[in-house]
Image 1 (tube, rainbow, N blue to C red):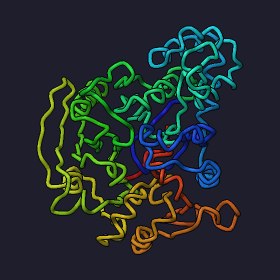
Image 2 (tube, rainbow, N blue to C red; image 1 turned 180 degrees about the horizontal axis):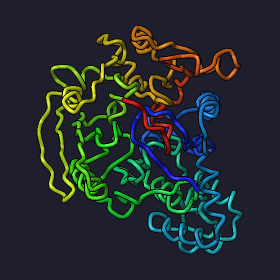
Image 3 (cartoon, rainbow, N blue to C red; image 1 turned 90 degrees about the horizontal axis):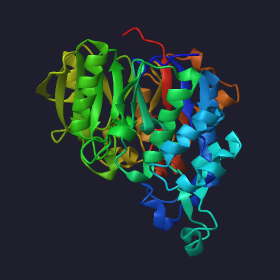
Image 4 (cartoon, rainbow, N blue to C red; image 1 turned 135 degrees about the vertical axis):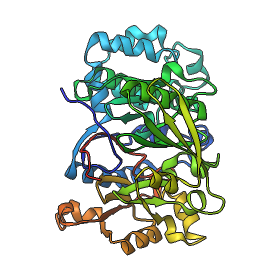
Length: 416
């Protein structure tokens, strides 16, 4: 049995959960892409080829779990399987076939849940369309970050803004409640139970900057009401003051989460998209000071960087697109500000964001292809600051970057 622990965005990564894209990607048609929150349909073989580089590099540097394997392990227990299917039946019309699903081998059931449960032949849906599903495929599941967040030893189960993704929250919550490798201190916010029109929250907006400071995006996916609720829950659970910087993002496709415009990459550095984070039109930021008894004090800050500086967290911005007016917009769209730290000053990001990589190089980050590490030509431990670049043009079309595709469950606490 092992416990989860996340107290920073950059501490050396000990364990991470990923989901390698499967046939659920090919179940999506052009007509369904927008419903499934995609910018476009993406070819499975190309996505798989790109994703393998991310997966295999992570396997070099940390303990890596696959979502399907974890779900299979939890479904192997008959009581847990029944409990999950009953819960899953709240969002999918499967009540009348639960007995049939209970007879599936755990591996087949886990795979079918992720790739979609085909509508039974004796159903009107099947008569209308033999390719219809009674529980839809999950083409967004490889964006593991969104379904759950860990703050200290506690979890936030996502209350997704869009119905099409709620199944992911049920799955990740089920795993963290039943798998022995993810013992935790309890649920701070239970998305499947608490979600409503005004309370939605997703992991891409939650950044754990230190043991007592978070940055959270107010986005098209995460509401101000949810952040208030989270602040009170954290303060009461830890019996210590908590500081949350709430960043009011533009409510548009390019900025669906905070990690599309800001990611911490080292003890004193962060990738940032200048128009939203640093320009005269930058996002409004409020500091929330939550007391253990539940009271919250609010104060507006000039910017996230300024507010963090006042709290003792000094971050030098490294600009997405190197701050160029055209390149920054293009590369932000391709998740140029969305990186994933696997150790202080060591990050993963897409190789297509060449101008962002130039900005990192100017700040002392060695830019090295993931393939060099996979072929044994380089060793991550030989570098101080490091940006590991991997191909991701097709992955980026899905709407996220390296941070989106990773759910860290245990990090070392870095010396700040």
